[in-house]
Image (cartoon, rainbow, N blue to C red; front, side):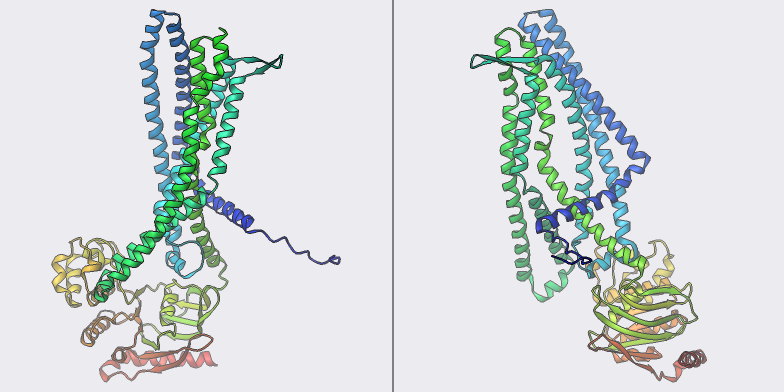
Length: 621
């Protein structure tokens, strides 16, 4: 036995218990993110309106139920006037029921649209904030294919609960209303059994409850794997869509390499996984269909069989039998609400968990941002344009990529970063942009400085070429003459007349043309700090020289930090930082002053060099 004061080991959760806890946690996260919609005024207007329509519709259903008794009693009594009167009343009741049904559908779908809009805006804003959409690709967790979760799972996650709530509310009201009808009409049933008379009070109500318990219990037992099957289907669909998207986005590279057969094999493999998931789901559908179809066939017959003894004994009229049968079906439908909605409930459960897991991963990123533990700090202070103070870059698990980089870059200085592949140059660029937050130390920017990055593969948004040139500013941010002038200067004069054409420019432009367009975008934005990450890799040396000279001319006062391998780039920079890969992470091993040509050594450049050396001596002291 453990001694006093010892901590007893906690009981290890079984795999099933751990999975159940995880499901509950993901559900809570989904609801905590989505329930805020009901703090808006519009949500309550729609909800109260829908509830009111359902209540009135139950009243109309009760009127139709009473109509059954009156009409069939008139038939039994051969009362022509009463039958005619009921025949004229029926169209009014039916029209009222249809009209209320239309109102209910309109209010229900309006609620679904409004909730989806609110929650989509919330999740997308959370996803896009602080580069989290990019950081999700760098951390572990169940958040794959976030675009599918936002577009499809979130749609299912908001559609189904509104239907469930409206259906459940209607089922409860229907059950309460028509149980009273069954109890009133049916009364007690007395049967002889072994010479003894047994009285069953409210026998129709008891029959409806027993029947519903059997049907619903059978559905739960038979469809217990429905949730996992629906979740596997959603995940496989998301993966298949992702493979297709990748094929479209990288069509040029695949075509040049002749990789169609290999891509087809990958598509076939993903499709087979989808079909296997659908097959498993189909098996679950078939099993549950046995219960739902059987219940639908038996429900109208059972009340007639139960009422038959009292009808034959003359204690119940034909109208009362028909009213009881109608009420029994309504009560049975209400009690069988779970039976009818279990497949969809399983599908919603899977979607809600997928949205919840995405939010959980985003929560983890937000908590790390707030605490700052294990994160690179960013600030705006100091005279230098850019200062890295003992900056280290790590993976999200703490593995070192870059260790203890300390460098200061003056305003207007042009610095080249070189090193072998794998030394973390691109990771350093992402850290500067704030997209790679993991690590330590501090990155300081000059106060109010505007940072602009040019990646190796420029992004072209969907739309016109003008939008691509102006990005990330609005399409109309720059006047036509300015855009045309810059396009001519970067070597894209043939496209000036196509600025307002909406074409798939991502596929039309070559890699070199995209990089030229990125330089046009850079010149239009006029930033204070420019970071070039292999931004001229797709250009030949003369074209590279042309664009770098253009950058020097238009953004002479801007601070430039370039990552590149070509030795020709040294002519456009004043310093060179050399990164070296080591076992415990890459390090900055050399800081070299580049002897630029005489035409580049201006008095401003010499002043910056003196100022930097003075700062370095002060820091060393």
